[in-house]
Image (cartoon, rainbow, N blue to C red):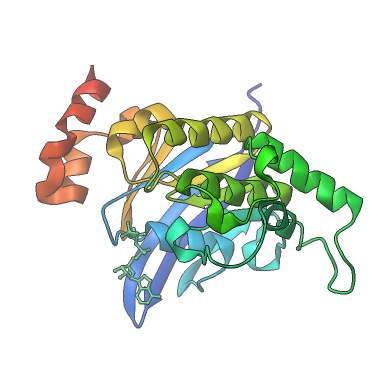
Length: 253
Ligand SMILES: Nc1ncnc2c1ncn2[C@@H]1O[C@H](COP(=O)(O)OP(=O)(O)OP(=O)(O)O)[C@@H](O)[C@H]1O
């Protein structure tokens, strides 16, 4: 008998609007555990809104999100988030280690300081992203890729099985992109489910087990070969498809 699927994220008929303009319309997706899933679509397609709705940061007009079988609004600490790098104040005076310890704050009551267990979880997370040697540096003194890895450590220190990342590869060089991908893959091997907003179609097939293609509505969801199809991409990206023809050739090969 085939093993029953374990849905860790279930999005049903999700519709989200800003000032009565829909950013997402009737999106339904079920994501299994231990997967690396990419969210693709053009600028303004609703990718960040999709992630924010799973986190409960934006309220759906219609529809629901379930995390590990429970209403997302009642679940605390089971989903960790790595925001876009551009949304963070990097001048804030805080060290690498302190950022990682912040990942534990869901578990730390307001009246007590982080314990040895919290600090150990933060240190382990920094080791996973290979940033333990820089743990006493101020975050403002790091390169863009190092900052990204520290924020991944913060999410890993939280101990959640689900990680949502908004464009972790934006603005980093090729070597850093590899280092970040390596962290994502190791997190997956450690049993995490990762949902990653990604804008580069040329690497999407290589990096992800499954892809979600959205532009307000869900256009496709499945293994990269079933999503990176010329008919779907031309509908979603319209006139900008030519630059992606090499992706489709590779996929179709
Ligand atoms: N806080 C907000 N208030 C009003 N409109 C918003 C808000 N956030 C997003 N939008 C609009 O909702 C739509 C979807 O935005 P979203 O940021 O989710 O798209 P995206 O696919 O992540 O875009 P990008 O790739 O450019 O980051 C866009 O039209 C955007 O302008």
